[in-house]
Image (cartoon, rainbow, N blue to C red; front, side, top):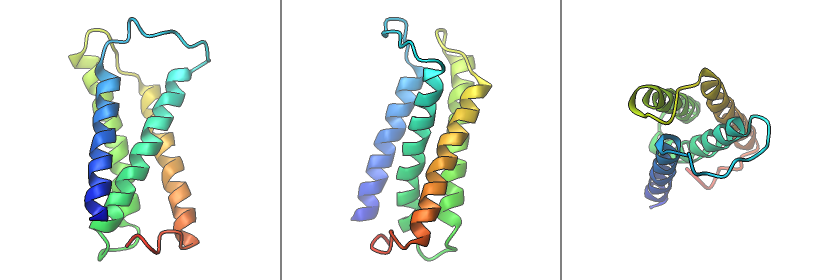
Length: 128
């Protein structure tokens, strides 16, 4: 039951990220923070990686301990790259940005680092 819950929440977040990264933002209010869009990418992929990690932790519970970390991190990075490619070639109002990929990777790295520390302190012993 918990695995299904994490899966549905992760899918929901994935859809939110996909839509927000591909829609036109011409009418959106401008936020005067330097590199604000990079912070948004970091946040999106931090949450994305956390949610998928929780699902993969249950999905791969009989496999190696590090597998959910690797799979959720790789999935986040590849998803971010795919979005940048879609922005570049499939939208008119958006363009792909290599720095966004770095921001996505940083957000995923922070999430995985946090979960490695939490896992070492046995914070997830009830989720297995």
